[in-house]
Image 1 (cartoon, rainbow, N blue to C red):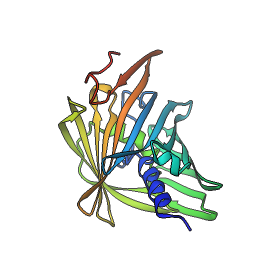
Image 2: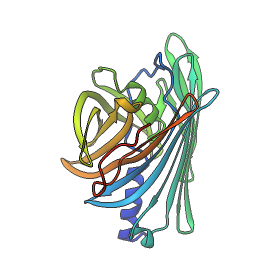
Image 3: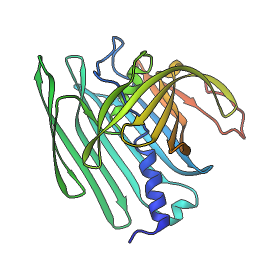
Image 4: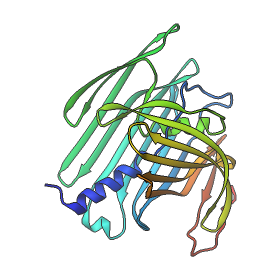
Length: 275
């Protein structure tokens, strides 16, 4: 049976992987196109302790977007737990509408692997909107879900919140593939807010995400001056802050030019690298 320390670390990785990003419906591509290609590094803090790190990559493809993320424990916890999580999601641009088409999740822990895999086939119906047929595998169990609206996983939805961060919107519900089923979340853009990160004040766009059936709330802050890259996430449960995800650095490619934003530790000189 899984020990308490292992369960705690598994939970930490599970929190970091989704990056807690969700979006509105319908989902369309903005006039300025898809999100910029980037590679970002994040850390997860729980109870003031850094438990895990993750590298998140987004690339544009011929059909749309490909996203990948890998996370692993750090510090003393790395000596107690050697598990890691690797996720990949593919999104296609179908006449201006973004649709998740593939999702692969692998959690390696000691000598055991947990695999989750989804494939979504879409049949366009102009009168009724998209019709999705989700087939997949969740912990060895076959999954079959039909949906008349776009569905997402906790990674692919990351791209969509970046696209829609500037939009003023009422609250919406949206479905995510979670633990072999569709779970619904209420999402709302809260506008601009000044935040302080390692001693540096920044203007950020804030989004609220709330699980429809439970008292779990996530706040996401994004930087409009840096392609709306998420800089901070807070996860709240039953009114208590349970974890924080913080951006450490991000590298963008703009028209073949590589630019890097680094958020240095507060014990060092607080500044941004020019890009």
